[in-house]
Length: 361
Image (cartoon, rainbow, N blue to C red; front, side):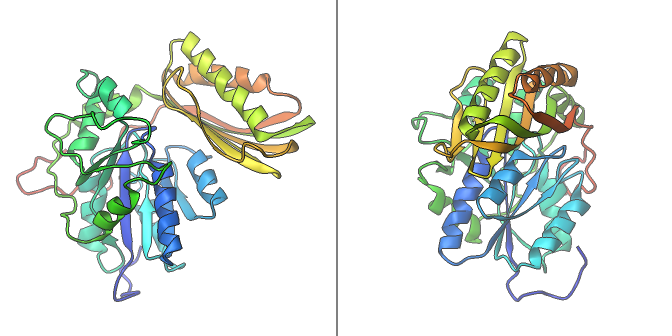
């Protein structure tokens, strides 16, 4: 983004919503975007992923969102790409830009928010950093002694606002030692979303206020503990099927195969877009009831565009083997047009701005 003259006396606000894989970031942002759009506030969205073909982007487009993406790395490592994405969106004159970092990313305050405040305040007003926490995952790993648990805690520590997600599924009993929880949110019912938005956009809370000390070697090990797989399949079926009938068994079969292989699911998402309708199916841990959104009543169709994103504690080779076997069981005729299985590269931020008393990484 160039340091061009002021586009508006009041620059649009960029709201970063972080949180671990499966915490419900996309669902919350689409609910928030709907609320703002209903009040005639133009909204845009920047998604983020380590690879290509992102379910979240497909789902946001399906909901009519003005969306662009940063691929091939997190916002901190692709800061220039983030600026380019924001620049493209500014041409559409949004008043709010939601930005959804990769779910395995942390240290955003020092590597993204503070650089934006320091050099791009004429173009973008930065809102407080929101971090979403899935109560079930917090109960499982918050006090664990693993690299992934370390990453999870660091995400929470740097938040300006900590919000519990999926409040429609859990009671209010979740507590995080030493952490103040500002809001309990449900993207499904909308509970708490308006109040969170008011506070996030209100301009009264400090931004990037937490001095985070982080061990980048341990951060790297945490990301490397997860295998990532992104894939796209085009189907031209001999016998038409509805999106639910095609994608549902695919997700169930992947869950069963990953469980049998000892691969712990961090997030499994499938988008199926067909001319008759589309659905998104997500699973956040092995054996969970899938979360299904979209048109379950869509009529059978021959053409399907399937996008799959899988994050699991397993090697990329194992994920590739499991997914290719699942695709091979799909009805004919299907074509894998893209499949990437990998581990994220070590995080190397383009910028890191710390407090004067805070050690640099």
